[in-house]
Image (cartoon, one colour):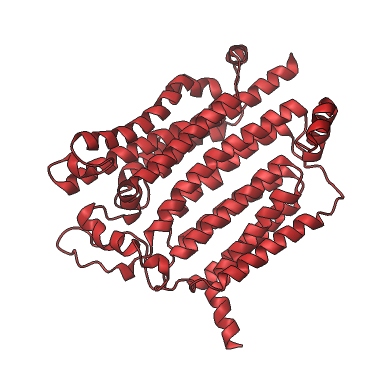
Length: 332
Length: 143
């Protein structure tokens, strides 16, 4: 049964990808890429990768689609049709595909338990993590403890991306002033949406906090929680306007919180060194190694959550401010 | 015949992923519109993630959350009962990084759009040629 679901979902994925490559209406392409993400999230779930599915569903189907829509608003909806037939590109791509398929012939069978990937460190993570780290969700224990250094790097990359977007999309004070004077928000008419969002928002934020702190025991963790939290705020921003949202989440504060998250993560690492252990070796944080691990993972995940949430909100704010600026530049 | 069926069952997941990679790569190379290229890159990225997750799959095993981890019911853990958590960890962070880099890519595309007034690659190249013909001529290549 699982195989059947797997095959059907893969078929849908390939069809969606083909449609994305074929269509010229970029709006439809963006919507299809949202569907593509949702389908792949279902496929991850089918392959028992719950944490990955969770992340893909909140990131791919939610935030990336939004960012693409926001940029489409500026750059126009239609791709230019060209009569040019890209034979060379087709040749390169087909050659790559053939080589890759040739490569798979040497790969271990799908789902085989004897595959080399399952032999090296994975059994140790599975067998010993309960004793060493004491967290039932092995993905979390590998993410935050065994490979904590790796995750620190990823968090830094997310932070760096925010710096990139902030420096690329600047918005003058004049635009912000002009926007402030405008009283009715664009979505003022959408009464049903506004009421529903008012009810939903606290639930979304509480769910984000649950995902954040329950990541040790079930699927979830800082990355997913950060994205869900950001999604809640973004939803609010879309319906109640940038002015209202940035009154609560001031850009300067968000930028500081993003840095604070990375600092918290690295600080835990330094703290471990001060207490006599290695960098990010949480055993020394408490009298009991397992207790120390719990504390370390909690703090590190909190750092990740803070950074991811504030970076996502910052990127969305920057994109939206840019569209607002465009509106005024056109008028001037 | 039986050998072929076994081969298909053993590899179909990888082949579907390769098909997706090929489609993404094609969109990145052949399409002229920058947003379309970025979306092609997204397809490529998701295909790679899918590939890693497929590698981590193990028949007859369940998701990597230890059952009965605490309390009296706690029992011995067999690694064969749980699928490989390592690819999941790597891909989970990769997804979040991918949305952050997507933000940067789209911001760059917007910048290009405001500078050149278009997102079509050939038109941008033409405008670069028109604006700085001597630079292009001396360097001898298209920027």
